[in-house]
Image (cartoon, rainbow, N blue to C red; front, side, top):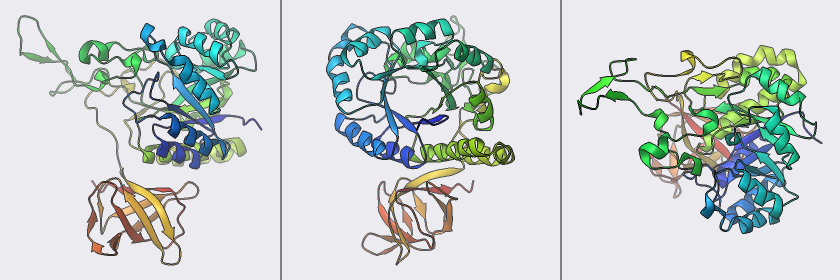
Length: 411
């Protein structure tokens, strides 16, 4: 059965893919070792991709693979074989931006769905119709479009083409993400997946004849982050997203932790399901949904271009830090209901006396204080300081495996 809308989650690793699936995604998008725009993500080997697809499909979740670089001549070497390998694994769709890559995909894997990336600068229904007529089944709209513009695009497109839009996550300061700053300033090509994020750097002005004399671009006495956009968050605006004709709600974040993905996906899953089942209940719970999604590490929120062109209120000029109330402390890998012992693979130090929460896929988080902590040999320990250290502590409630452990930051 086709769902009214699709919740599309990012997965930068096999572990995160499984978390996205378990916490409520209808589809996930991943990148392989080639042709994607997140070269610094862990990405997937072909064997990991096959395992992830099998895991997702067994639970009714689709898997889309990114191949959205802007390709140069040398990039096409081996591309056909790569696409054939994806086809053999039953990948549900390929996400592309470059017309040359699009043409290769259409020739080599004609039966696979092609989704047109936001990188292709999809700002009008004329280009969307052209891409549809070439065989595209989905258009990821440019982030610069308003609700009214998206509605107009939807009204001019055939019913069998779907629209996808980003609803949550980091915003790029360049048009449709096509940035040259990284290439120019750090010799890392953003359009080949190697962005150094110079939009998050702190800037001063230096006059050519006065080297070493830094003149602040005044926002504070310490300089300014003139390109630093706030993070997109549309969880309060799900009715407007549905009304605009957007089918796939896309969460940004293939570089993010399992905690981020679990938190955001779960919050949007609950918000979407509440709205589709009871619009009045959604109105009453909007503040709750915003609070829940805000528990993931984030910059201050904005609604981006959906209602109006961003103003100074949608930028953060004074710093580039995150709002972070919880730390990603570990993954639950086992629970013994008889002994009431949870086994954790540590990801960040936590200690006896810490307040922690186990974020389970369904239902409220399980909150507790770590009274005692044991290592794998049963020895009492005061903390778990070592990466991927295996430790245990008591939790009285039944715990779903796998789940995510987060520690409240007392500040």
